[in-house]
Length: 207
Image (cartoon, rainbow, N blue to C red; front, top):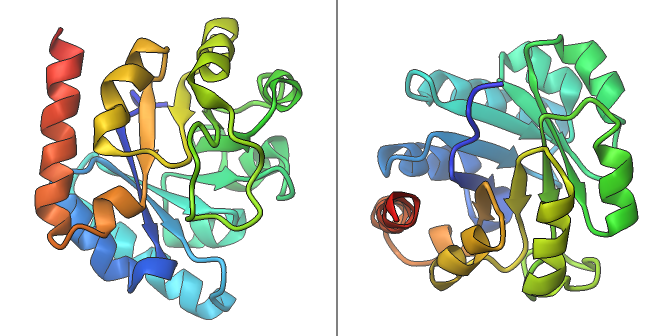
């Protein structure tokens, strides 16, 4: 897969129109956006995915949450699945070998299973307390997150309660990327907040 961008932006429909959010994230400089819409009917979800793929800048990645079938139709770069979704090997069968496939993990056992399942990256969390996802798994904390990063060879995306002020400590702990939702979207200007995230990430990567 292409190098995983340091910022893994998520356009969550719980915060508004995911197409508009995606466009604003792209304008702010995001190079990867995941479409997340847990409540949408398939037709609307597909329409949103098609529009976001069409609006994505050259070389930017559009990842679809859960729905491999709709991602394939929309021409998205890949799919992110959770523990209760279609397994990554089956997702790869739907999308093809060049697609990007990631999976959410919440425990060391899930991580050990995930690394055997033909994924390109694993998302690990929640690292911090989060209100974005209801009934989320137990918070891992930085120490356990760092232990998981140390134990795997795949790129690790930090998820769960990620804020701008957490970035340095997450990358010091071994993160390759950070997944952000509310701290990107709920600050007025999505474009400006995305730029601020990217500036901070550039500082960290330049150290």
